[in-house]
Image (tube, rainbow, N blue to C red; front, side):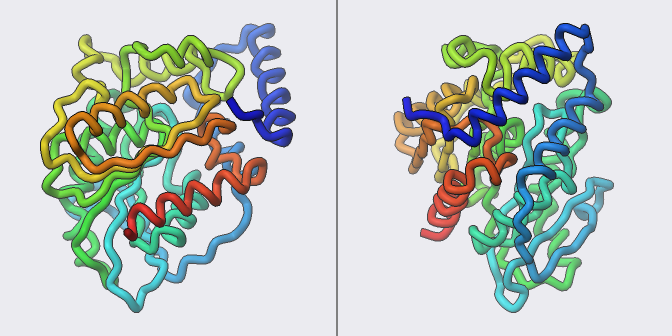
Length: 305
């Protein structure tokens, strides 16, 4: 395995020291703390402005689901990239992910639509997933009602928990989706991968924290395996897929295993493994700018073959 960049190592030590201190003081995690943490990290480390010419705040047509539309070239009819943010099904929002959404629109040359799906524990499974399904079904109607030039070709993307949502949509509605982009996706709610043991603590996302996230998300669901995209039935017309995984990420094996399933089925798929990165490195861009640039380049190349 490659060495982690020094900038990331230094910050990670500070992060782990703060976690250890909180444990000593007996401070339990709360949704509010988790949300504030993701927001603070992203605001601190994703700071280089990316100007997008047309940005519109609206709702998915016929619903109360907020979304934000980013059109990097309003004079051109561009395809659509529906984006579901990460955050353990508990954290993240349009605002938190605004700088990442702007980068996705800029590098992919797609109209990015970021969705504020409902979060746990206030809205447990499957409410957030329902919001994402409705967003896919109504995205063309939503854009038709805006002063936007677009092509009705829809790809979807998601990071972490957003990757689980995106993958579930690809399995259930493959005819509606052109391509699928998964960024260090969370695909297994059953904890069956070795990497959850090998990298269980010390690398931002810890296995015990993942368990806590899932307990908040699945409040009334007994069979988490059936909800896990890693084990979901793969349609023969599953969209072409690109996966990005990270070498210091406890959930890296989930992406790798899904890639293997797609390969066996003969689905067009690509896998990029950044072996010196942690989970959520796109939210730490100032610490690892080269890896972020590489990732956005991979996404752009995949979506624009």
